[in-house]
Image 1 (cartoon, rainbow, N blue to C red):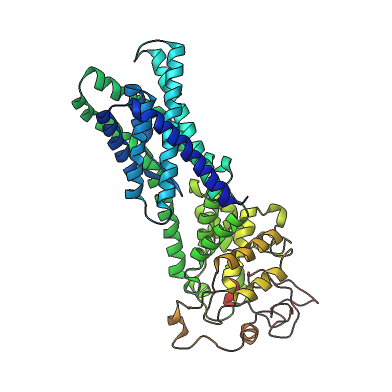
Image 2: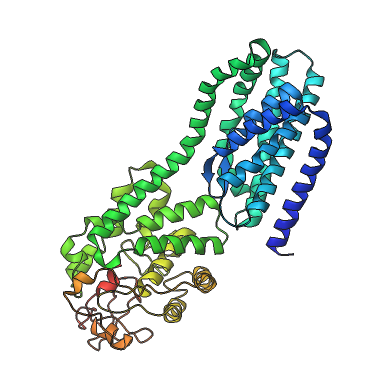
Length: 485
């Protein structure tokens, strides 16, 4: 069976279990308490926080624990139905009905499991609420609720994406650990209701708001990371007119290739940020080199080669970016050791580095620059395949080729820095002649504009090595802006 078929079976099985639980619970609860709990769950879900893509976190577990303590598992099961209208109010897009069905079902099942745990452990331990033994039973119920809830969510995300179950569960683990202590809010709420009055619930607004702030912190921290990274990208593109939009495209396509290779969520997140920042070191390269309209000489190209090291120096004190540093440091290296600035080979290049390196070269080839129009997708793929096994990792090249064809990736034909042309036009000459006129080796020939034979990388800016006693410069070769991406 295919992945979508397994996903359908998983959702249908979850929904069937939930329906059975609701059928069992409805005859056992009173109307008004049920309506109150449904409204409370609706409010909790309406203001859920984004934990990671496709996963939201809320205080619904607190509300359902209160329901278990006040009315047993049956009241919690019925109260979980409040997530249905909340989901339709909060969500937009296709498959709302299916998503609402699954989310409500997993809340129902989690509430039933937590309620059964509380009843069983309470009967085993004895005691009267709120003594120590019943509080232990409440804590056990909270743990069971959270584990059931997050396991069901991790399962559906794993089936709907390329993520492994363990990777998905790990990515939501911090919120799970945070929600279990919220059991104290549930216990305090029940004590207020039983020993004071329902009006005393107004006092619970303060701890509930504090708890919600804890969930929002995850979302806000991630947004702060995103803003910081985007500010670096903006700084790069203000300085480097030739490659405006390049970082975003490399980031987007790198994540898609990572998904194609089965990379987990956390590593895809690292890939996204690192690909956005891979050229941040250009901030430290002189502007006259960055935006030089003609070929670079040897001294200028040597300065350009420093930008990966400069990038690492800029980012190394930012703790959350530490996992991304290797991608910034090595994104111009080759698996045969012929890259720059460190000359390391494939043994030192992680899977994520290999992905960004290949995508970086692909976007450079398929983007229009002031000195030549973008190569077509088929031409760029052919060049990647020609360099597979020497410059690029074969498995990454294969995944990249599958991805661009699957998503219909298109070359970036519009040149966004037309003011640099001084009123001129982007050359319309045959592409190979344009490449030769810029001193770039014609793919597959090894011949440069001056007729000498050089051993250069296609468009990744790798250093030309000496052959027959002559350097690329001696053969009349100069690095083009294409090699400065």
